[in-house]
View (cartoon, one colour):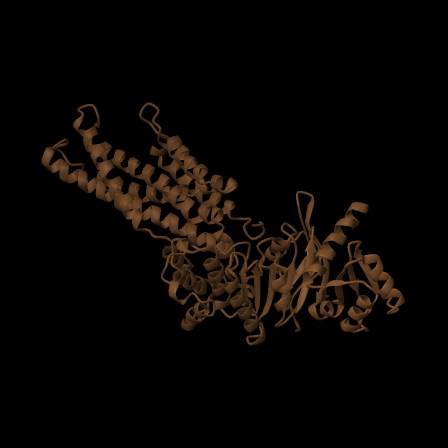
Length: 224
Length: 311
């Protein structure tokens, strides 16, 4: 399996991903700083961390749908899948390697970028003093756990768009469905969002994995 | 095991329509099988079923002695193929594409890629991205990819499409080399009959999803009837002379203007010409002809059509 993931990495250039991540980090940091500058924008340091986490997750769930389009849907559209499927390798494994790559990449990007954004915010806050008081240690600990759990949930739910994209092998469907998912989870209703409830996020993550497996279930029997 | 490939009553229906029906093919080891048929006859569908990309509705495929099932993966190691069009990862170079192919096939002979590129004459273009390739070059690269892992069975769908005459000739020699020297069995589909005639050991003709005939080239060559075609100044008069002076019965006046075909070859051309001229029939042209695969093929397909019309 590791070999298959490596081959996927060789087939596609992932240099663009680093650029995307860098730009996303800067944009999210800038946006949060703007919010913090508004006296009514953010209530506390902790709220700032929550907002940044949400923005990072939203960004990379959508980003994952772009990766899925490139790694799977495009292979069907360009028919390179007919080459891939004449190899003496289980087709489910071939696709699973791609899912694994997207899931792992999304998890890593969420964790790293969230840390970068929070670190950036910390540095700016030292200078400008939006919130003179830093959160207590247990708040940091709680946020750290949330970060990892949410990132895992995120990498799971980022696979949901594949299910819709595979129906008609369509790139737009894949990306639009990812936007719908983040909109559903993160649109606020009296300040409360569906995604701020961790158990809902985890449920979505689990559903994502199941749905992705469902999408590739028939691959051995399907005609090309 | 003497067969590299057999299909048994292979059938594929899409939405109730039979695209391939009851196709039973037999390809011996080391042989070149010319798979002939007009566009849309079902050649590609059959080849996709052989490479397990499409699952048959009924019937079965046996490749290198193994019956193909949806989870037959191991046998794919021993096959090489181009299906429909030569498809590559366009952004990667020719060499990178072949390297990936060998990795996926689990084939780790370093020289294989160089040798394959040399065989198809692409040695100098291997560092170019495939998106800059012409169709002819992609066709060659596709063949290089298919043969790089030294398969026992090659499935090539329209491999000479998009090639210039020199390229076609090079590939023809390559196919013969692969078959005769390396003992590889080749299934080559084409609608360019002349090419198949020169390299195939067996031809299978498919039309409307049905295999009309499967015959060794030997048999077709044996069936080729030679005849003499001549253009005389007066067809009726020429016929009279042939029948009465030369006692020939097996000939036909094709056009009243004077085109005559003589199927009886016992009498030398010289004597026929002499007899005609002595009897006041002048001869404009004289030639000896034989039926080619093309005529045989057209005959089969046309025959099929009139059958269908009368049904």
